[in-house]
Image (cartoon, rainbow, N blue to C red; front, side):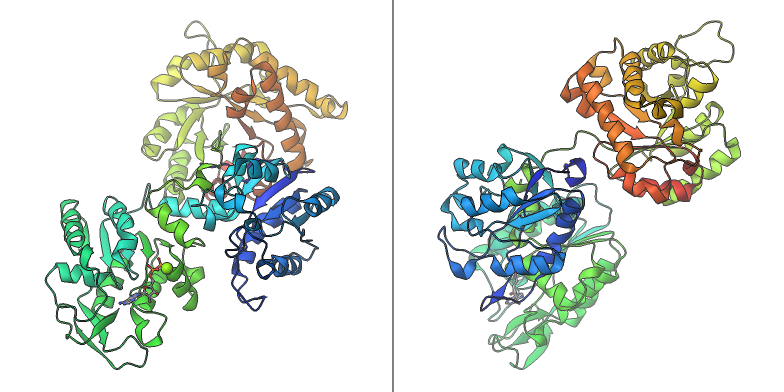
Length: 640
Ligand code: ADP
Ligand code: MG
């Protein structure tokens, strides 16, 4: 999982943001501002967090020379309009004017550099130039998915010098395109079309190893029909690809992939919208005609296949959709995907344009903004502008603490209900249940990936400790995480940092992940001692624990003063303490270890406040109390 702008703290910091603002223009006027609008969520988020943004983009192909016709001036004006705040354009990229505007930036303000491709060093990925760009920021936000397949100075080179994270657009693209390559829901159908087999050969080969069904339509289908011995008339055909097509047909069969070709086609004498057309058997296209779209029988068969799929990836139109008389096949695929309840992903420039033309963009899970980039991603290539984004050190962990609530029957009911609404997400989910409920909850959650934990454990392995449960006992029932030092135990049962530390050591010894609770009381906070108190707890609780074990721990920060008192900690207050905890951990160990330890927030997290809290950079999840008792409330927090 890649780091995103939610993982960095940009307040008062300079942030270099690479966007793709390369919009189509006519006579200097923007004809479609979709790309600018797609860049807004990232920009608005960073401005809202008080960052100072240096925005960067290319436009067209100026070939390394200043070309006034390719100035970003209209883009700066449109950005200013859409954001409702001034976005000044620098007269240059790394020159005096850019620095003048940079030095004037205040928190929550943005500027735009001039077209980065005015410098030949950009496309050459010149390290000196990349370094100069890097001097503008303390963070590099990569949000230009559309150019991420190019190793340029502003898309990859600059990442050598700055902490590099993904913007929201990039995050969305790699998340959903990634879903087409890994952990797919089945049945999985890929639809390939467009003009040439040669353009898509790598894609087809990569897809054969992944999909259950492969539909081939569009201009490239005729090469396959020829390979099968059909007559294709004047249809598009790549003679030198016929053998390769035969090969693909064999490979698909060997891999057990259902290869689906059109059975009929709409054929015409000329490549023109008004050329009279007829529907013919695709194996018997008349000598003087060419197939320009798939026929109605093929449409029906393909749509049927799509409707039964849980994942559908589409690249390449089914016909010459630019001509209204030959758009039907492409429209039919788009509509079938729009109606499909599974994951629907569209890659490719023309396919995306077709979906937009039919007004179905909102009905797809993803319409990729990157033509070439999405193609290369789906081919399984590593894109330089994606590779350069840092990996997340910590996966969020949301744990529900049931405390002393719920009978066995109620626990059963909870898990059964929860399982129907829970899908494995990119977060870890844990249920921390009373001892007696452990066996049933373990049994019912098997194979779901949900972690089951205990609420406390003793620090001895065995002995005369009436009423206690030991780490080996927990291991015996399959428990691998346990709350240690919960505020209620510290408050009512005399838990001290000394016993907490003993328990921590024991937990690690048995491979149980401790969820260590720390936090300050109201008196401590009011006396201004909050940070001091928590710092002491962390130091004492982690005493003598080696770094490699500590790195696997989970810390839960509970502001005791804000639990059930009606007082609330703001998301900023919560993050401030979690940041301080990580600093203490870095002092106890090192930065690398501290960066791995997950810090949950445990102060009355509810669906209503969870979004704000969980988006804080130093908060890696939540220890949820009351809101974990109802499946529908708990799932809302998990989904965030
Ligand atoms: P994408 O950009 O989605 O990857 P391609 O660039 O591979 O798609 O292909 C799109 C082009 O293929 C369109 O311009 C379309 O007109 C053309 N095309 C589709 N079917 C045919 C056909 N039967 N004959 C000629 N051209 C076709
Ligand atoms: Mg194209």
